[in-house]
Amino acid sequence: MASSAATDQPKVVLYWLEQSRSQRILWLLEELKVPYELEIFHRDPKTKLAPPELKKIHDLGKSPVISITPAGSTEPVVIAESAVIVEYLLDHFGNGSSLLPRRYKEGQEGKVGGETEEWLRFRYYMHYAEGSLMGLMIIALITTNIKNSPVPFFIKPITSRIAGAVGSAYLEPNFKTHFTFLESQLASSPSGGKYLCGTQLTGADILMSYPLIAGKGRAGLTKESYPKLSEYVERLENEPGYVKAVEKIVEIEGKFEVSPKL
Image 1 (spheres, helix red, strand yellow):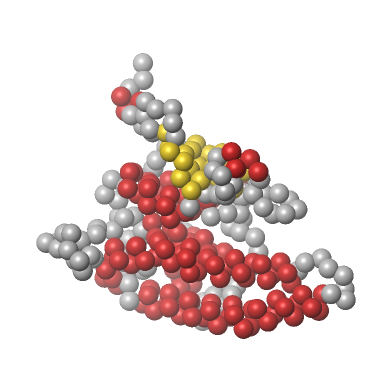
Image 2 (cartoon, rainbow, N blue to C red):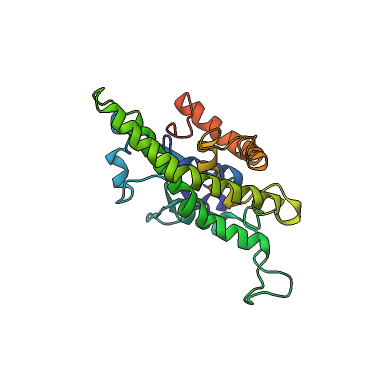
């Protein structure tokens, strides 16, 4: 007979796609020590797109996606979009974890302006990671693909010129703006912390990890130009939960790659 603890445990399944943002959710599950199952998917070797099988899980056919089947139920809750997944997991499995900062200052509960700086930063970066920074990374990836596309030799100068123009006119100044901003945010982290929201790793840091680790050493993100930001990225890569999540994939897949080359 199963114990009550076992029967009360919801079933969590992460639908993981290679070279995708789903690795952040795997990291979060490791941090929260939530029992989970992994279903592995691979990109089409030619198109690099997610396989059509993912549409059986969610209509958009994207990753990450998780399903959570409550104890005693056969109907899973299916959740897509990285930030929504992070918030949902922290709401239900955070159990007072520092991954979710305290929202209100003492005695300011429920009041406008009563939020802690740590929580305000957390909420901001939960949206910034995908809403502002990740968009630049996608455009950088697209321009790299254009530059390296297998086209006839007489077309190559044209595609290279287009990619170069997008890079110099749009990507480079915008990356500089964002990386300078993040450098200053780390310098002013609450309580002199080494994370974006303060002294403790949060779910927002985990969300920020993908675009920053993917862009490390590229797009002008170097130790010489952005020492605090570069140190922060290295710190994220050395977090025990991140290392464990990478090891999990290497154990299953034999290798791990953060993303396509930028």
